[in-house]
Length: 355
Image 1 (cartoon, rainbow, N blue to C red):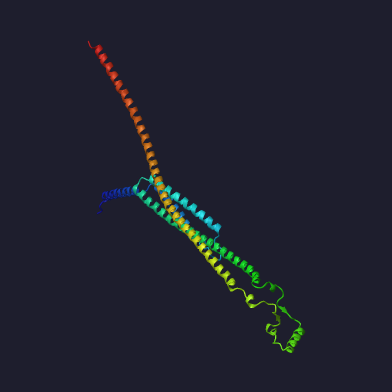
Image 2: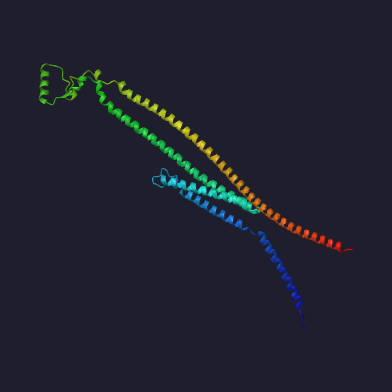
């Protein structure tokens, strides 16, 4: 015998339908709770684009760092003009990215109203700012290394010029000293004092005459045929040793004095450069503090602007409400006056018709 379960089935289906409706309603409520505002999505996309640009800039700096710092490389990796162009491009890109980050920060402070969204985007902006600072520090270190290398090259060029000038002076002094050696000898030495007797017969004749006269042997053979009869005494011919040694002593003294002057001058220049580096570091620190203060002032200005906008909107709404209240109160006054007039005429008529 079959049993009809239609009523039971309908009741069960109705219960399941109610459960499904309640589940869908809770899911929709949960979805609406977890949805973000469209302005948050827009600002997140802007932050992603800034992060992508920062990453590309850091990759470019890393890829060109080796060529930028190859100053003494035998191969020309990057010239001075290319380095100047790279400095200008990086400076421009860093300034643009810093301005974009500041603008994003001001938009976050003035547009978003949800606390969690504002906190999350504030942390994102802080991360971007730290990333930008690291990239800027890398570029600044590269520029500092380039400046130090340029200063060293200029110093070496100056030293090379000084060495070349010293060598030129030494060569000129040598050319002047060689002709002056004749001053150490007698004026008669300019005449032909050393004469070569090339006539062999004359030499033989003199030799024979010397044998006949039993004179002492001639010293011509010891001097290989040179006639030294007109040479002055050896004491007058030898140059003064002090006069030969004095130029070297004077050169050494002059060189030492020049080295001391150069050392003092370069020490003064080095101290001046160190002072300039200290001042530049202090200026950079003050510039960073000034930039932070300017950023804080921009934030305050944006907040004041937003407050002024909200105040103006509130004033407009208040004026509208006052206008509506005035119009409503005027209508009520008309109605009240009409009622009073009607009641007055009614009383008059009643008093008139009352005997």
